Amino acid sequence: MSDLPYTHEQLQALRSALARGERRVSFGDRLVEYRSVDELLAAIREVEAALAGTEGRPRKVRRLLTTTSKGF
Image (cartoon, rainbow, N blue to C red; front, side, top):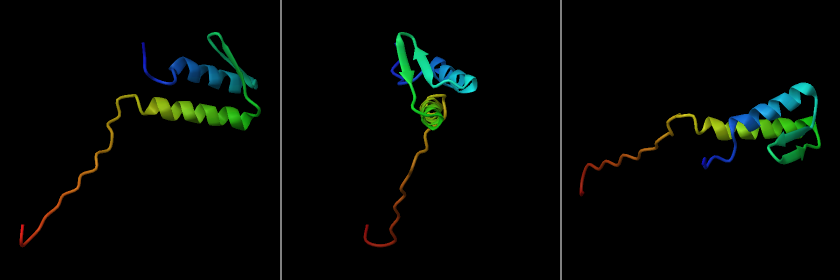
């Protein structure tokens, strides 16, 4: 079982609903009705962002290098 909050199938369902001009999207046994197209677009962006972080892209690593010239 996946620990991801969203799936690619959910993203495809959101995109398909947008393409058909619908505001209702079903995910398995759940039915979600968005109040506006803007809300549907926001949901698509949220799912895309969540999935983008899980596709093998390396995380940015921040390194702090400390140097001293005297005393330490």
